[in-house]
Length: 64
Picture 1 (cartoon, rainbow, N blue to C red):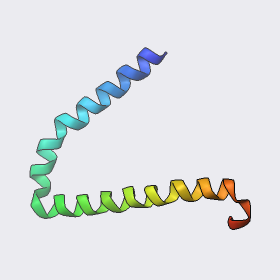
Picture 2: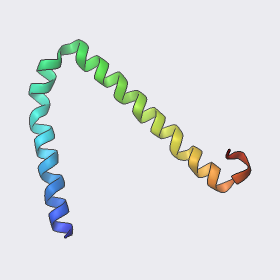
Picture 3: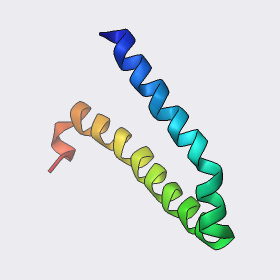
C-alpha cells in the first residue's frame, strides 16, 4: 500500500513539475508575482497558526 501511495505522489509531482514551465509562460511575470505573493501569505499564515495551536494545547486558558 505504501508503494502505491508513493507511486501516486511521484506521478503527481512529475505532472506538477512538468507543467510548471508552460504555466509560468502563460501567467507571465505579473501573474507569477501575484502567485508568489499569495503563496507567501499562505505559508506565513500556516507558520503563525501551527505554534498558536501548540501554545493553545499547552496553555488551555489562553485558548478561546
